[in-house]
Amino acid sequence: KIKNDTLYSSFLMARNRFSELDSIKICMKYKKMKNSTMQAQPKINFIKSKKNRTYYIFVNKSYTRNGISYIDLTFNSLIGWYGHEISHIIDYRNRSNIGLVIYGLKYVTSKKFKRNIEFQTDSFNIAHGLGCQLLEGVEFCLTSNKITCSYKEKRKKFYLSPEQIIEQIDRNRVLKY
Image (cartoon, rainbow, N blue to C red):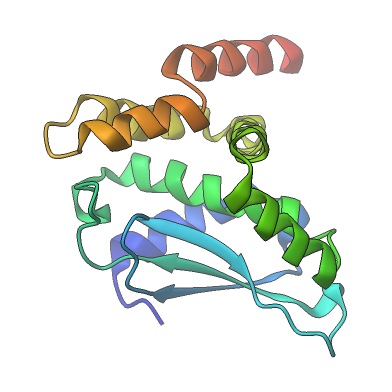
């Protein structure tokens, strides 16, 4: 559904890091979103089992209210962004349909739950070797004058900081060697 070579190539680069999802169907689509650049979402179908579930990664074609557009991200940052969204899919895949509904409700109503999920998702991304790409995107968000201060504060509240990302990258390097 997305006919943009940069978006598609960066998606493939990120997806290749997640071999445990080789049999999982992930579709990319454009979607208008007010506050998100990308968003992973399961297609809940109460007839199909979770093994046959389809997942979507939606990409916002235009600028968000926060001043972010995928157009401003480097290729590496896009890989990190996709890795983050694919990491959400890792979390979704073992949940039942009802479990996903409950998950979604908790995500939008509990700041503590949301923070824990986003920290875990960033950690999955780093563990799959995409920490440097994630870091590049985070540093762009925190330093760009195009992005609103309110989004920068939200980013600091709910996601890993650059220092935490670097710490996890270093820890993963030590564990691998």
